[in-house]
Length: 221
Image 1 (spheres, rainbow, N blue to C red):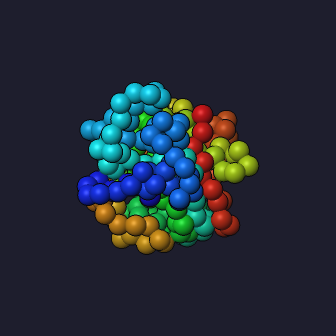
Image 2: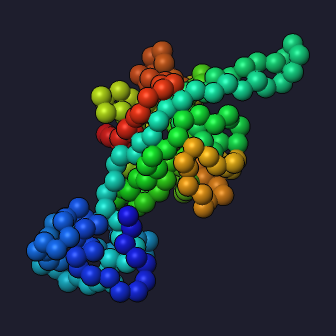
């Protein structure tokens, strides 16, 4: 949970955001407190003993490298007659305007030192794998440049998304993504984001998203 962006809050609240227990001893020199990610326009000096102030912690958030939810499977038929084809979506597809809803989120939140806090909206596979987040800051750059991590893996270490993977032989950069009707537990707020689409299976080393079961989606290098 991000710290308030205005008003009064306590050192104890900062400590809890950093992963500490409320009511326990803490100080601005604690490495976990100085390790929080500063909000845009703010700076939290990580060097112990340097000057630091409550104001530096407005909007700060702890590093969060794990999101998760429940995978599902949906099918969508596009075109008609002899041109019709059925596409199967597996994973968590809750906001993409071109997909049937599959799965649901229990935790959409990531926070990295490169990007700060952001939300994942979709990670699903068809003949490829699509990743969508709520920030437009990824448009024109790779996933790793956006968040600071190359992979999204499950708790067993299986690679579900690889920033270095290609699509149709080309390097992948983010493109504009407009959200459709949000469901599956996906929180609302943003009306645009970034989409990355990579090849799945074969020599890519990327495993398609599963069609059922709970899953943790862990950022990794």
